[in-house]
Length: 138
Image (cartoon, rainbow, N blue to C red; front, top):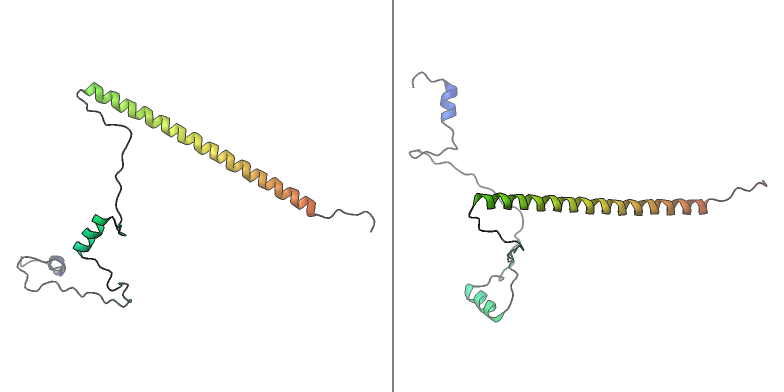
């Protein structure tokens, strides 16, 4: 250890790393909050009040996650052939669904293109109506 270079010593003595027998603890400088407080006084409810409100049917502003239920059941698979058949069925459903999504997207694009073309023709017609006709007598 006597032959260590200065860079080796420096890499091993990182002040952020706390060791079990460190003499000086890592000092956190902290932060200073300069923004005004957004808390509103007297808006807290005790647990007793929350339970009373719940039993009376008074709703609170607390968000609840709703459970999600799916229409397909996951089968209990006893045999590997059943697993293969289930995988093939899932892949077939995925292909059918992706094809349906692709067709709906193409239909939507066609509708949007038709609306765009109709709008462009209407603008051209309005511009033609607004142009004054050239008179031959000047």
